[in-house]
Image (cartoon, rainbow, N blue to C red; front, side, top):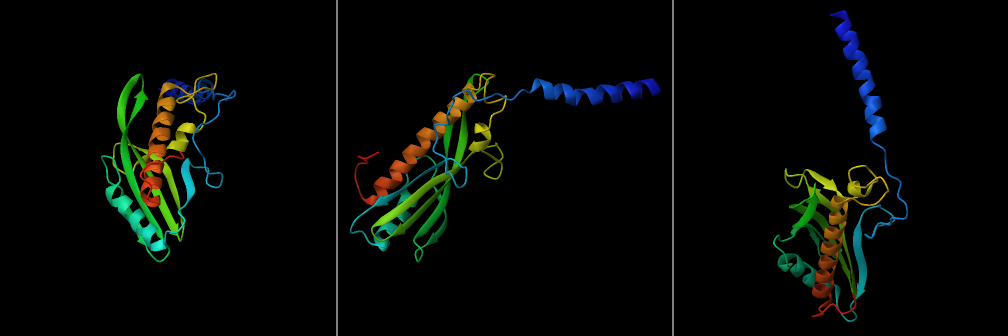
Length: 196
């Protein structure tokens, strides 16, 4: 019995060392993340300041609030904060996007936070905090930045994205751009987004 315990202890001590040598982190050889990243927060973020000459803060605020109520997509954004005095609206929404998991395409909820701030003649929007739903609701999410950190699950040994990461990047890029375009059109009052 004593020898069995010693053997189990030695085997257990060797497993962490073996696991560490198998997980070799890839080196990124020239791959550049195509998603826009906020240099201050390090988070993926689609944002801009849009000039709307002649529009009052109240007009822009009303348009932004209407955007939250009528935004295109299967899931309406939930308005979490609406402060007319400061001109700030904040909310969350999700969208089902395709993600390649082990060679199969699956639909996964992609959450994000939307912030719109208005002032006379201009507004600023930010679509950020992208995260994939862990299947347990909005509380259990995996931030997109976790996927972009070099690891053996999302990058191959040459440092390039595996299909799961590439599909993730494609989904976030498409979804973020579409949402940003929708915000710009609605709040600016333009029928078409001709400068994007």
